[in-house]
Length: 336
Image 1 (spheres, rainbow, N blue to C red):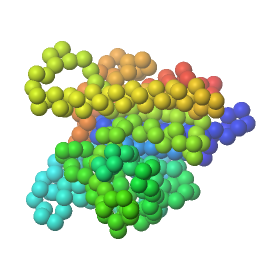
Image 2 (image 1 turned 30 degrees about the vertical axis):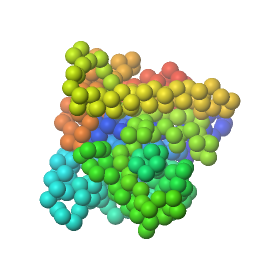
Image 3 (image 1 turned 180 degrees about the horizontal axis):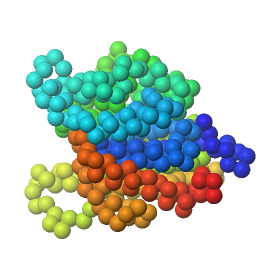
C-alpha cells in the first residue's frame, strides 16, 4: 500500500487522537482529503486513541470502500450513545456501562467482527491504558500481521478472536463515565497479574504516537491528526479544590502532548528518521475560514451526535490543516 516517490516505496503512518465524536468527525475530514489526494487507501498504519479508535476501526473494517466515509458521516450525525450506555448500564444488573458501550459499537459500526478479520487493510493499533502497570496497552491487527493484544512489560497474547467492538470500547472508555474493561486470564494470560483493567487510551497518550516510532513498523512519514482538547487561557482560573483535579489532568495531558511532538522532532533529526507532519484542532495557521479553529475547538468531546454545522466545520478545518502541513513539510506527497 506504500506510495512511490522518486522511484522508491515510502510508507505512511497516521495517528488519530482522542476527543470523542468531535475527534472522529475531525479525522473523517482527514480521511476525505486523503482520499481526494489519492493517499487514503495507501496508508500502511493507523494508530488510534479513544474517538480516533471509533473512526480508525471503522475505516479498517471497510478498507477500500469509498462509501465508508459517508456511512461514518451519517453515524456521527445521527447517533448519541453515551447517555444510553450510562443509563442502560446503571439499570442492568448483569452488564456494565462499558458492556453497553461495546454493544452499541457492535450494533451500529463493527458487527461481530474480530480483530483477526482485519487482514486486508493497514496495520491497525487501538490503544488503551493499562491500570495494572500504567503502560499503554494495544490491540493490533491488519497489515498481514498477527492479531495481538498486550504491552511491553506484561507481554502480548493472541487477539485473533477478540471482538473489535470491545477493543474500541476499551480505548474509548473515558473515566468516570465508563468503567474500565477487565481482561481475565481467559482473554489475556499473564504470569505477573491475575487480570488487567483497561481505560481510555488518552490517559496515557491522547495522540497515539508510540506505534509510529516503533522500528518494526518502518515508516517514512508520520501524520498526526490531533483533535483533542486544547488547553486554553483561563481568565478566571478555578479556586475550587475539586475542580483543580480536573484541571490537573488537562495540564498533564497537555504536557504529554508537547513531549510527543518533541519526540517526533527528535526522531526526524536522527539518521533515517521519518518525516513528521502534525496539526492540532486549535491551529489558526492553515484554517480555511476565519473562526474555524475557534468553532471546532469549542465543540464538546463527548459521544453525542453532531449537528450539520459542527460536522461541516470539523471536516473542512481538518482537511485544510492537513493540506497546509503537507504543502509545507512534505510537498512530495502531493506530487509537488
